[in-house]
Length: 270
Length: 305
Image (cartoon, rainbow over all chains, first blue to last red):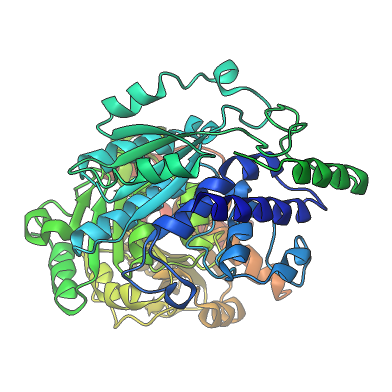
């Protein structure tokens, strides 16, 4: 499994690089692409023939600017033609800087931070009320946790004991332009979530074996789960990794080619 | 149990996907939480999350009816309503209580007097402003059946007039007279009706148009009265900008139509917090004051008795 997923993850990173012409949030996509890939390949019960099936598992990308990671995953799943990535930012398609439901597989649009946790709580509540066993997964950025709406929804999810809800935090420790702990410090994050009534665990967000182990603990008996995924912004291209000035990236052709070379030299990303 | 709660329960019998949500605002729905069981969700004082949660429920084919104080429901969570309800055009009904003058003595924090301006600016969103409790109940069936999101400016004043059958996007007219057409929505309807007889005593023939829905707006009727009225009055407990006066100005400018128009609204100011009848009096919105304003406008520069 490990080797197969690594291969896919490398290809997905290439797809994302293909979307950088015109600019994209490359680093934020590279930090969570392994997680999204793992979820769709090994964890979520959903396929292209059942995207509207009420028994499917749900995935919500709340940090919408990481959408290249989602679309790269869709390409690898065969849900989206690779050729269409060339339409990024073109007016003849709907592939732009944030996700929207015109792209098959996107459950709900995002882009404005702090929205999809509440939407996921609504879906999780419905699954509880109707006694459906769907998994409901939402991926949040760590910088996104600055938004107060998340903390409202955490209180509510805990109150209603939504143990079907799985929140994954892409803890890459950088928000737009700053190290999170240098702007509005989030730590101790695990303790915060614990005190809100969640089952909390951490996972290496670039290690498929670790994800496999940690995700097996979901669902908790009565608490919603939060997985803090330790990640690296820009993971896979060393000259971009953890650089605070590499947020929205609009690269020249030369730069893109250099990054492609860097990526290809990373024979073992993990 | 009030008439609104009775309606919710009867609607629920036919449409089992109905869910009632609130942000601890129970004034309109005090007695049905137990009956509704897990179809009733109180998320605490968290407007943004309630809107997001209702979007999630709507994605699962539920029909969420979400309640909150009109000011906080429309303003605190405005971006959630715009982005998570309006943009995806989800079938969710927003019920704003204590809108306009109904916030009485609460003060500017609670005065929803820009709610119409905000909600009508959202694509796909519709607006229902019943004149009283009877008007509310008459309109709810169609409003709930609509596939679009709706903002309901909740109002349970006792009716003083018998209302006609509700038709989506259609107004109802009371009395006839081409001197003045008073366009009104919500709680001020009763004052407009009472102003009719006062105007009649002064020899002014007027009609009152209860708009019911501000979006869709009864443009056909409005064009007709623009054509046959000497004066149009827009009467609203709302800021002058963005509400009914703006709607009329847009229709008139769009159609290159000119008519005299007297806006009675809140021009760049909040209203004095007090009890409802005292607010009306202080702000110049009683039937007597409204009729005087109209009389004064019509007789300006003329020799009258």
